[in-house]
Image 1 (cartoon, rainbow, N blue to C red):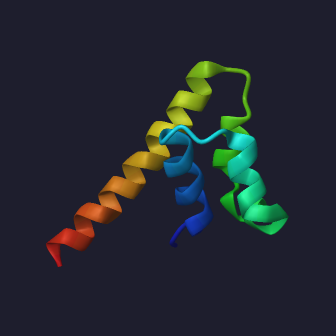
Image 2 (image 1 turned 30 degrees about the vertical axis):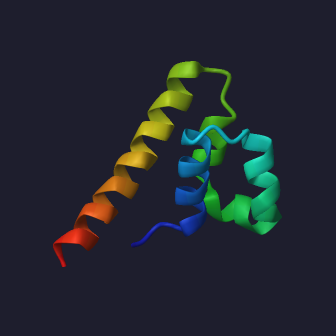
Length: 71
């Protein structure tokens, strides 16, 4: 099953330094729902939970990019 593009959008935007509230505003309510778990994790008060969620999501993005290059 593929993940929603919104989750990738959130991960990449936050990694590039965009503030989470602005990223979520850009997605709108429906997009935030589709982004799912990464949004909840990035809102955590635990720095390690936020870091782990971001690292996991970015690893998925990089894996997808590598697959595209191999085609």
